Length: 211
Image 1: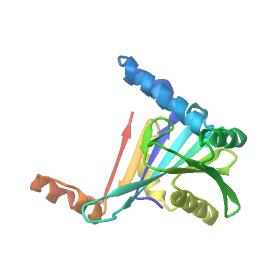
Image 2: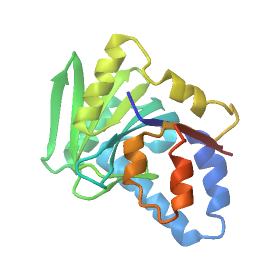
Image 3: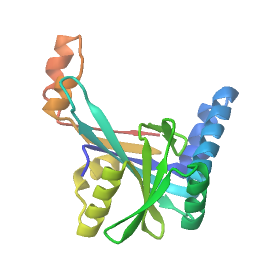
Image 4: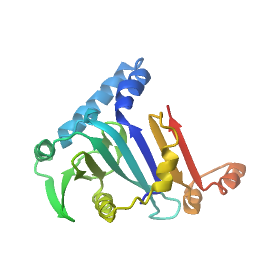
């Protein structure tokens, strides 16, 4: 269950979007290549081997005026569990563990720096949990989120059907997203314009696409 979801066509991101966006910025292209290589070294996962990524975002409010976002990623494509385990043990320098949960093996990688998931999205997790949900789908995120994903899979239901429908409105999009806008989320936004703040109180959902 998520407050917002995004669906990413990974192949088109790498083959179409990024080459165009970074064509005139070789320094940024080199930085991205480094992040991709670092992610592969740390986890044994090659971002180019995935076809689609779905992201689930959950909002948490630890204190007044503070909103934290917990992210879990579902990646569909090809991967080698053995390579993932071997790379994790090597890169984690002993800070690597395996955990059994609901019949699944969760791999825990200790990350000493802020992780850029698949080289693209910043993810503030100290320990990255990874589990194979089936032969071609991985779940990645913090341990609590990954366990919740396993639980949802075992229930055989799709709690985010409405949000996924919003995120999938454009079949040709490279990225589609949909999210709920709760009163608590709006309360925590610092808006200096009172008119915009009043208008936003009527908003309950948002969605969009990137071409």
